[in-house]
Figure 1 (cartoon, rainbow, N blue to C red):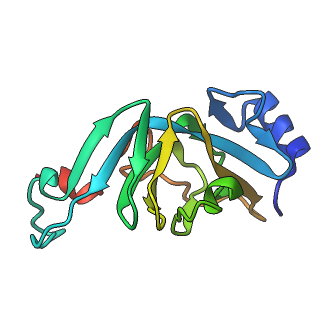
Figure 2 (figure 1 turned 180 degrees about the vertical axis):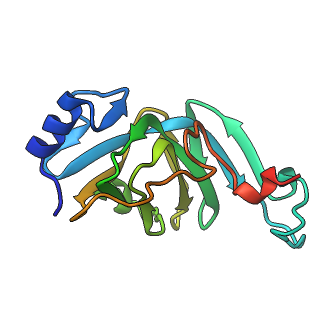
Length: 176
């Protein structure tokens, strides 16, 4: 079942769902509009092989910065994060979508699911359009649809991305 704005407001008021900061324009008809944070990592074009079992320095693969605005270049891949810190209970999962305004610019994000029990700022991949698009930190960018599961998860998310803030690179870079 997809939660309505009424359901979401009840969960926020009870503290079962946490969105911080929570703005007046966050809760929408059937989900949450989340804003862009100020960190981003651009994927670098390289012939270096990324071996998850023996990862090299992430700087060989990503160029990371923070700024109040940045440009998504055509066909380039980026990692961005949400301004909001999200904490889902064990019976809710989230489906992350691009707001339609941004999809109409040709920007694309792959399917992303936020697991039941996840907490942290969301890191998402963004793929550039046919033309450069300027983004600003604080812009409403994503729409998170909350789905109530029939029963709570037996094992809510407790992985290495739990509690993340800012852009988080793949966990195998932390193995060193």
